[in-house]
Image (cartoon, rainbow, N blue to C red):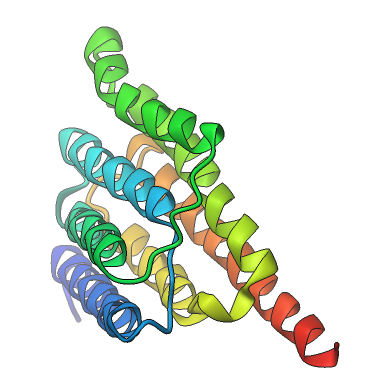
Length: 198
């Protein structure tokens, strides 16, 4: 039987593998012009995810935080690739607010000296980061790949299983983002079904 630490390493490795399984086809789809992600959503998600990783590591998440950190870096990669290829660049004032909120989490962390406050702010901001993508997917559901978000659900389950320390700081972000991904996938599928019937 596997030790608890060995099991967490396996869960962390599975989460890491799923991260790449989700992102590689997404990168290819952007490169080919089939997927047109909203750059601001991906900038917000990238900034938030990297900062959450740092907060998780500060709270002893251990190996469970690494897939989150890698995901944050790959998320920034999506924003960069999308801006060079075929991104949705329709940016409204609210998008700027969400980006500023994401970046404000670091000073909040330093002021309060608690990583939990940063994770709470970033979890809320990450949810708001779905705003531009939800607006876009509602009108153009075929320009977004639901597969990435579906894989992210399972990835976040493995992330939670891999955590070496369970606390609000370590588990809140992957749990809430996983649920948001489920809702986003359902929205995309529903809008595609409605579009097919019209």
